[in-house]
Length: 177
Image 1 (tube, rainbow, N blue to C red):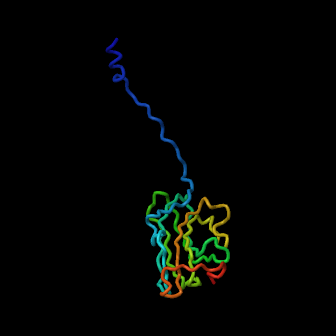
Image 2: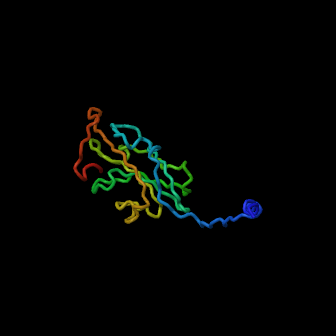
Image 3: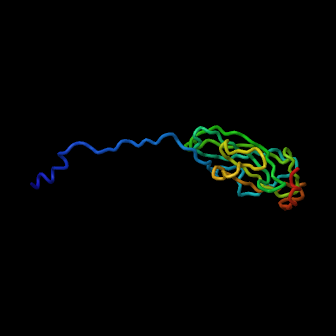
């Protein structure tokens, strides 16, 4: 009897393995920015002097797109009434969250966009799925904040080299043309 109890488990055969679950197609998820890879660093004040060549802004992004492309856009003074100025848009091909090689890249200089020198500004990269992109003052479309990833740089667009690191605050509506 004791021998049967001790050897019983080893004498039985077979295993209990459940069938693999069925997951279906991937569902769309909002974009996520890898802030460690953002260049230039959003943690530094960017002093932009007159006639500075265009600078490349790079934002690494991951998302589960379920076949829908992303769009990235650069906006000067985003959500500042009378000052907001959209300066660059670019589509980013759809991919999966596992793809860590995607990024939004844009070259920009205040000389190209009508930003008045001598004022402090922000430059914001917004990344969202194309169905939530609105190319206008209500960027992005209303009620889709859940699908927007953003990074903001602080800019000091100086009017001359002698201004240095001093940021001048411009009256609303006077910062952009």
